[in-house]
Length: 193
Image (cartoon, rainbow, N blue to C red):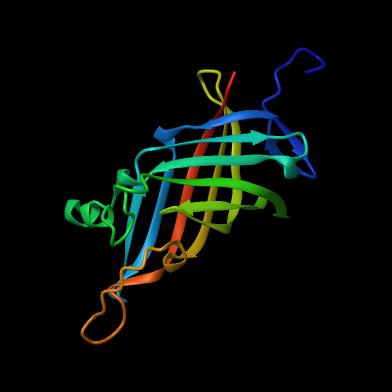
């Protein structure tokens, strides 16, 4: 901002990054979801409709951080009876564990515009370290003057590690719901004043 112009992004090691500051997830333009194999023949996809999160973008990108809280009861798989079952003790146990959290502990570059965001994920009161494979999708100033950053991230977890151990078995063998779950995020975050 030395010449009086507003900085919306910067280039670090040949990669466009958002300006330093605190960003809030834009819930209307963010997807926090998951995919899990069902009966070994297809995948069921779901999402959470209620969450909040912040990104603290530091001058040194590796000192940046992310914090997210998810309302576990907001699960939506486009099937009300399945969603109701996911809220029970068989899966999410939302009566006793209404929120999930993610708090980053490290940010490491892995390639141009790609980062490993390592952090503590808590589901059902159980915390495990996970690594989100994260890609910056772009930085822009929108028509309303808001500074936005877009990113995508994914990781794979074993649901048993978090106490989500529903184990119905099919007649021919194999689990009705696989143990491996892919977490998928497509997000926009807006620089806060």
